[in-house]
Structures are given as C-alpha cells and as structure tokens.
Image (tube, rainbow, N blue to C red; front, top):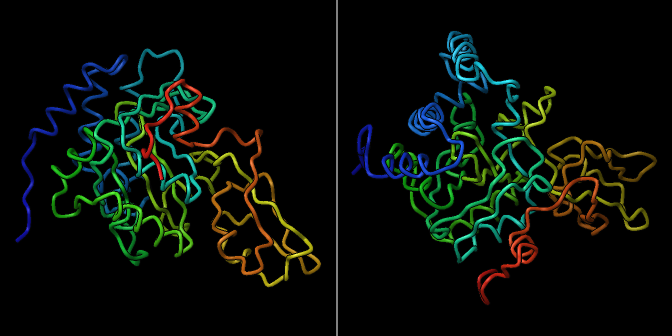
Length: 315
C-alpha cells in the first residue's frame, strides 16, 4: 500500500517553518524558497540540471524570481554560494551517519568555503531517510539504484518524507552505511550538501555519479559547486602497475597515465578516494593537503570546538 502525502502544511512542514523563524537571518522569502524546494524537489532540481521537460520555460521564470528575491541586496550570491557540496571520502561519510549526539558547528568557512550555507547543525541525527535521487530521476536512462540520497537529521528527514512518501523511506544507521559502502563500490562520490533554503546548513549526503549529478555537471561547466575533501591523491610510482584502473575510475577526470605510470592533476583532484579503492596494487593514497581546505571530520571538528564526542559516539 502506497503512503500518501500529508498535504501542503503537515506537522513536519510546520516544524520546519517554526525552526526557520528562529534561524537568524532567515526571512519569509527564505521560508517560501525552502518550502518550494522541499515540496517540488524533483521539479526544482530537474529544472537545474535541464532534465525536466519543463526546464526550457521554467528557467527564465525562475531567473526573474531570483532577481526579485535578491533585489536591494548589495551583492547577489552566486548559485554555488547558496547550494553546494563538500566531498567526503567514505570514512568521513560513515562518521557523519554514525553521529549519536546533537551537533552544532556554525560558520565553517575553513571547511565549507562559501559565503552562505555553511553550518552543520544536527538534531536527531539518527533520523535518516533514503530519498530517490532527484538528479538521477530527471535522466532518461539513470544510474541505479535511485534511493541513494540520505537526508540526515531534523527537521529535514521528516520534511522530505512528508512531501515525498512514495519516494523515500526511513533507514537505520546500519542501512545508511550500507548504502554508502555500495555506492562507493560503484565508483560514486559522497557529497555533504548544504543549501540556503534548508536553513543555511547541511541536510543531506548525496552519493553522486558523474553522469547524472547536477553538481558535478556544473563543475564541468565552470560553476564551483563542490569543495575538495581536504585530501589529494598521491601516487607511489614504484608500486604503480600502469594498468589504468584509476584513470577509468576517477569521477573528476584527474588521473592520466604517462610513461606507464599514473599521474594526478592536482588542480582538479577532489580527494574522493574512489581511485584508491580501484587500485589493486595499493599504489594510491589520500594525503592531507592544507591548500585544499579542512576535511569535514565530525570528531575532529567537535574536538577543535572543545566538545569531544561522547565515548562510542563514532565508529
């Protein structure tokens, strides 16, 4: 039996709006934006990727609306400033779905290098919903499975399930981790997504393929919607077999073979770790690179903020 939506203003929507009214700087226009994004997610993102049939006539209309919403502001934020992702190696993504306490980390400019939407506030972090990926769903021949977007914490998990009951399902931490592991094995990239309309903070881990993902498409077109993990791939030339598996696996096209050995293009490497898992000779490794930014490592960030996680809070 299919679940039905709770209507336009169900309990989760009211909870989202109540929290929005208590969020500093969050206006009624922002609340409307958040409601539209949550309720018509597939139209919203399908329009952005160009995959929705209505995208051709909706884009000019939304561009005008965007100008109206930012009228009077001295500087209009670009798209990447309001909607962006942080690349997560598998280990960091697993830590994020294993958080067992409420977290409040604000103004993470050193981690999320954008002007807005850079807070990580987790309430009820064990409330996780698997949502059918809007990017994949907008494609005529999408990668499968579809239900790989993880909405984490409240009010977002309940909000998404309220408006998309037929396309979402609650999952346990173990199930969420299994989704991450399976997507990593498929060569897909984990991104922690932040959005202005989602109270200006983190709300989801998306597991992205380079063929369907709108953010990765935007990166290829010159819009910097994704921030590096803070790591970069390093090659042990003595161990490299020159097989080319890493070149084929890299979602960002950052590895190429030259003289029988893998070479990494530093500028475009996002430190996702997909290539490391593809290398059978263990010639590749992720290494910290301060010039790439600070990793989104929850235990480390909590420790830096003077709030070490509770014993057993991470695995």
